[in-house]
Length: 594
Figure 1: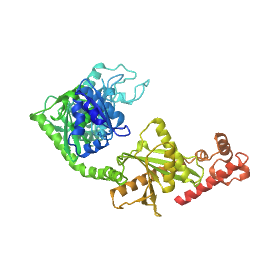
Figure 2: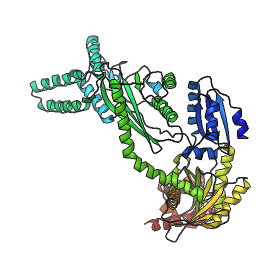
Figure 3: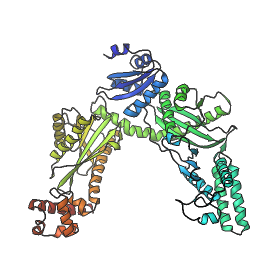
Figure 4: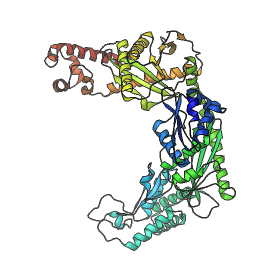
C-alpha cells in the first residue's frame, strides 16, 4: 500500500506528515521536492533515530504548497499543533527583560518582558538584558538622576520629589518642555549606547552632593558609578556601524546540537543565549525551525549572522530581517566565536544530558523490548489509595518517551465508599478511558497499575467493556514498600527484572511518582483544614446540613465529641455513623503520620 502511495507523490514543495498505526502523527517535515524527500525514508539507507521512526510509519499524508517558504510555515503550524514524537521539542522559555521608555502621558522607564513579539511593536525598548537585576538597577538609577514622574496617579499638589528637583511637577505644574526634551534625549541616548551620558550625570550629582557636604549621598552615587561601569563594560567588537545584530553559531555532536546566540547592541556584546537540543532527524531543518521559534518570542535585530548551512531565503521571508552569511572579516570571526561558545556549552552539558537520556529514553526502550511492544511512547500509571479507611481517591501520572508529562496528570475522587481496590480500579479506568474515547485524545501504549492480579483484572475487564486493547502490567511492592515485581497482564507471569538495571530504576521512579502524586492529593484534601472541607467528604451531608452542623458545633472536635442522639437532630442515623467513622479514621491516620 505504501509503495503504491509513494509513486503518486508529486515533485512539488510541501509539508509531509508521518503517522503510526493508530493514525497519530509522529513526524512532520518539509521539502522542496516531496517525492524525493518522502521516498528517501523508504528507499534509501537510514540509520539511528530515522530507522526507528521509519519502523513505526504505517501511513503518511502531505500538503502541497506554492513554495518552500509556505512549506516551512505549514511544517511549523503542524509541529506546534501535534507536537510529534520525532520532531524537536521546544521549551517555553521565558523572554529576556528589556528597558522600555514610555513618553506619554508622562515620561518613565520600566523593565518589560514581552513573550509576544507583536506586543513590542512601536514601543521604545532596549536590550535584551540577560541580567534582569542589572536592568532593574539601571532603571532605578535613571529614575534617581532624571526628573521622571515618581508617584502613582495625579495628586492635586506637587510632592517632595518636585521640591528637590527629581520631578518636573507633571501633576499640577506646566512642565518645562525644553527640560523635558533634554531629559528624554539624554535617556534615549544612553539606552542606545552612549554610556558617557549617564556616567557624566552621576559624576555631576556626586560633585553637587560633595559641595553641599552630603557625603553619604555622594558615597551612594560612587557605588552606583562603580556598578554601572562594571555593567556597561561589555566586550567591544570591531564593528563601528552601531547596528543591532545577533550572531547564531551551533555545534553538532552525539545526536545533539548546541546553539549559541550572541547579542550585539550598539557595538557591544551585551550577552548570549545557549540551548542544547536533541536532534531527532534532520539537524539543519530542525535548526531552522528553532531559529524561527526563537524570534517569535524575542526581539528581531536589524541583522542576523548565520553560517552557510542555514536556509536564509526561507528565514528571511518569515522573520523579515537581514540574514548574512559572512565569508571573512570581523563578522566571520564573531560567527566562529559563537560556534566555539556552542561547542564549549555542548561539551559541558552533554555528559549529564546523555546520562538523563539513558535513564529516561533508554530505559523506556528497554521496557518496550522487555514487554515485546511494537512501540512505547505514552505510559498511564494508576495508584488507588483509601482515604482515612473509609473513602478512596486515585491518581494517574503519565510518562512520555521516558519523562513525566505533568500536564497530563489527573486525580479522581472515587464514589466507592469502602476499601475496595477492585471496584475503585474499575471506576477510575472507566472514567479515564470513556472520556478519552469521547474527546478522542491520545491513547496510551501501556497501562501500569500499582498492584497485582486483582487490579490488573479490574483494568482489563473495564478496557474490554470499552472495546479497548491496551497492554496492562502490574507493579507490586514488597513488605518494605519497595518495587519488587512486574506482572505481565497477558499471562500473569512475573517479568524478571535486574535490580541494577535502568528499566528497574525507571519502573521504580514511575511507581514512586504515582504514589507521591496520589498521597499529595490526600494531603491536599486534609490540609484544607476547615470543618467545611472535611464535611464535604461525607456522603449525605449537603450544604444545608453542613451549615447547621457548623452553626451548632463550630469545629470538628465538638462534632466528634457530640452524642449521636444530638447529631440525629440534624443528619440521619446512617450519616451519623459515616461521620463518626470518618472522624475516627482521620484521627488514626494522623497518629500514624506522626
